[in-house]
Length: 165
Image 1: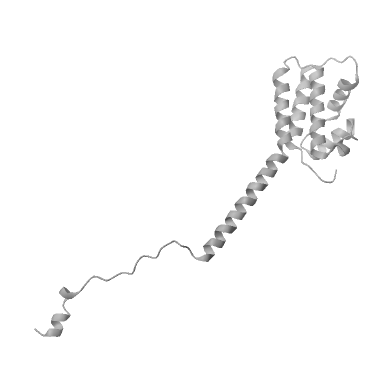
Image 2: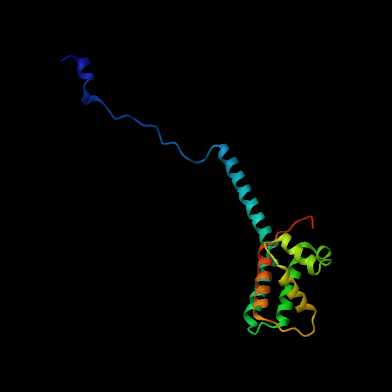
């Protein structure tokens, strides 16, 4: 057999030598930039979430106070109903500022509540609440008390702050 054929035989073949695997670390400089941008974005969202949490703290506190009124007033008293209406006004003062809210009373207050939330107050309910607030002797009924609780709950949960009040 010829020497060249013998050298070209399959028995003389060796395995292919592969280069070392490419390492993932250290990454290219672009990945450091991407990581820093993602970290900055994460930091931004955490700060925004914290600001929103602090900004809506008064709502959580008002809802806790509302829950207290719901639990502790089984007889649905006039005093409790007036305190609930006061809670709604206090929420408005915190959200919109005393100088903007203090000027509202009766119909202007109800109109303001309707404009800045999902609260809808019909004329009959407005008149009943006015009688509740201003008549010396007023017999509180359960339906009015429930309507006031619903109204105050809806006001606290759905009011939207507006810079142009």
